[in-house]
Structure formats: C-alpha cells, structure tokens
Length: 289
Picture (tube, rainbow, N blue to C red):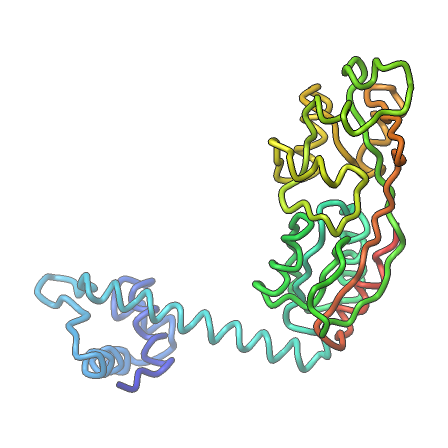
C-alpha cells in the first residue's frame, strides 16, 4: 500500500466540498484529476470509499473512517512544515517544562511573555506536579526543563540552584493549636489534629513534621486546595509564603509556634536533560522570585 499525501488531500477536499466539482475548485484541478485521485486511493486501500449509487456521490462509512486517517496524515504534514520553519529560525519547535506547585506561577509566565516579546516560534507546554511527582512527569513527558524542590534522583541531569522559597506552618485563627497561648508546640500536640499534606509529599523535603506527614490522612492535589482546606479550619499544614501573604497580614491564618522551627526553606532546582536552546535559556532566565 502506497497512499500519498496528494490522495489524502483529494479525499479531504471531496469531503469538505461535498461534490467532485467543489473539490476540483478547492484543489485547482480538473474534475477528471479529482476523480482519478479518488479512484487511485480506492485501489491502494482495496476499499470502496465512495457510494456512487445515488444522484450525488458520497463517502461510504468505510470512506469516513479512511478520511479520519487521511486527515491525521495531513495534520502531521502541517506540523512537520511548521517544525521545519521554526528550526530554520533557530528556535526550538517545542519547549516542555514541569514545575512544582510550591513555585509561584508569575515568574514562569514572565518567561513566556519574554519568549513572545522575542518573537519565538516555539510552542511552550507547561505542566505542574507536586513534590515527588515532578520528576516522574518530567521523564514521562520528555520535558526539557524541570523545577523541583526535592533532591533529584536522576544523576544525569544538569542542575542549577534557584533562589530559595520560604514556607510556614499555619492554621486558621481559632484553631485549637492557635489557642494554645503561644507556647512552642510539641509533636504530640500536633498529632492530635489533622495535618494537611499535598499528594507526593516526600521525606527528602526535610520538614520538621516529617514523621507526622507519613500519618496524614488528608492528601490534597495542590497547595491551592491545601490553602482552602486550612482557611476552612479543617486542619493545619505547611504553606509557601507567597501564597498566604494576604491571609497572614489580615490575621486569618496564624503561624504555629513549633519547637523545631515554624519556617521551612524550600530549595528549588532548575534541571534540564542537556544543553538548552534559545527558548529554554530565555525561559530559565526569568525564574526569579
């Protein structure tokens, strides 16, 4: 079987136009050339693609199925054409980046804006994951960039340290742990209440509440959901400062006085599978907070 792009284009034009004449006009070909192209496609596939029994020639159900495959071929052709144009311009065709939900989104978006301002032809694909899930998604999606706050397992990655982020152990005002009179809290006192964690929590993070994290019964998908749960008074937990500044200032959330320390320093790392192209370097340069 040797189906050509031209045959796929002819079937697509016939389906869009509804008639051989309309397909001929769209393709700027003679009526006979369109008819010949469709007949060739039927011979190549060994299938009856056209129903010629009625007043107007139509696609058979089998023809509709083959049309779907032909359109995927034409989409691949367009994508290849665009990719070649982008490569010729010097930009990467696609730039994939995975970052941890503890990282603020604004610097990432600044990087995207910088790419747009530079006239980059690169398609940027961003995705987020939580803690241990970041490196898993990085490899699963064959991404070029990753920002994680956990030590990296893959020793083959190029790693660059980013400015640290701080987080605090907080609860809503009125929570029993807040009403303790400001005395340093012990692990036993914390264990009597609901500790909220994010899915993918990992001991490598080095939180003072590490042992309690393993016993947590409430795992939330990200820090935005965790914040909502803490504000609702469901429990207590660690939150990045950038996400709770307003609530801390208003007093809605209170920092819990933990004996081991109520402030945690996250250490973000920018990781790549190898040398970055111009779009990757531009996006990486914007990661400042």
